[in-house]
Length: 514
Image (cartoon, rainbow, N blue to C red):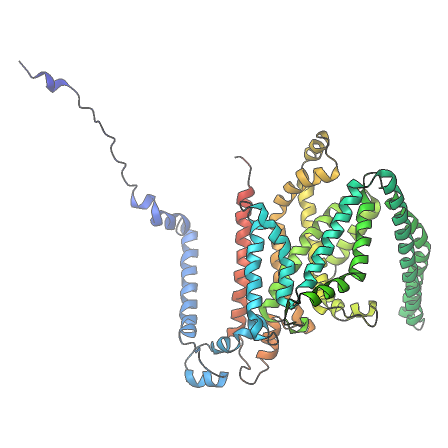
């Protein structure tokens, strides 16, 4: 009789461990095969790229490897190299502080610049990364005033007083728009509209007189002068005829917005801000500083320089141009013809003028439009021009995002009973800005690189330092690759960081389903 257990099938009680994939189906080998040698054409391009990289490395590596880091001049570098191919990195060791901070900023104040940029990272973090606590935005709003005090020095009470007056202006706006009764607001709107309408009419009248003066200065000698004379006179007559109706229109528009706050709240707060900043700013901060002096060594704007100046201009102008570009984009789509016309003219004019032209206007011509005794800071003038220039481009990028939204989004906002401000803030702008992220980043990167144009108007940024004090010195004349390579590296790090952040943000905001 046979054993009964011999006919019973064996059943495993544990899972067989998975086998490793073949070597050519996973890991680095698969990546190399798929990305570098996936076909005859790609294989040829890969080998050609390897050849170019190898030849470049063979040519450049000795230049880096034999580089001289300790020398007092280019002549001493050449003596140390003794005919060997090598870089003179000693210029970076000798002039690193000039390249980064400029040659006039006091060395004992370098810690202030470094601290301000460290605080910039802390202040920008809650605005760039939504996972951080929203309470940190209070420090973000407070940071510009601290940075102003650290970089420019002087009394701490000046930026704090400016902050207090801004908060007071915001409170006036909120009070007029929501807390003042309608009947009182109507009287305020009438008074504000009358003042602003008369003021605008007066400004147009003064502008027309200036056009008449220019026409007389041009004269009528020659064909071109005669044509210019006629053009300026036509513009002057148009301004004379236009001033009174425009004043009436603006005054009535302000008065007509009293029921919902609207325009009267904005104009009232602007007038309040103008008055307090013109007449209260200096007495308040000087009185506070006399009681409790908190001061740092003051540094004039003409002493700013180096890569610090590029970072300063880039950070401020990008921060200011994005909200201004949003307003311009919304204004260009406004149903009100006056607001739309002003935005269209501004955007098209700015986009049709090179940035270098605006910088020359900021440096030379802007002073002719100011009172003789006024002292308008050059950096402030440059910031205004660069901000206006980039805001026009950002406005067009955001307008593209607004145009890409389907009409149903606007209709959905109307069906929920949202007014224009609520619909724009909660529904329209978040989607439009998400679409516009690549374009905004492109403008921001281009703007940061364009800050080097300020060297044309005798501002010693990084490029200005290289072209001026460093290469014109007897020690480091004819040194090009080392200093320009160092500057390119600094710009690359910043621009690449901005690009990587934008790609990360696009991935975070990608809510589409495939």
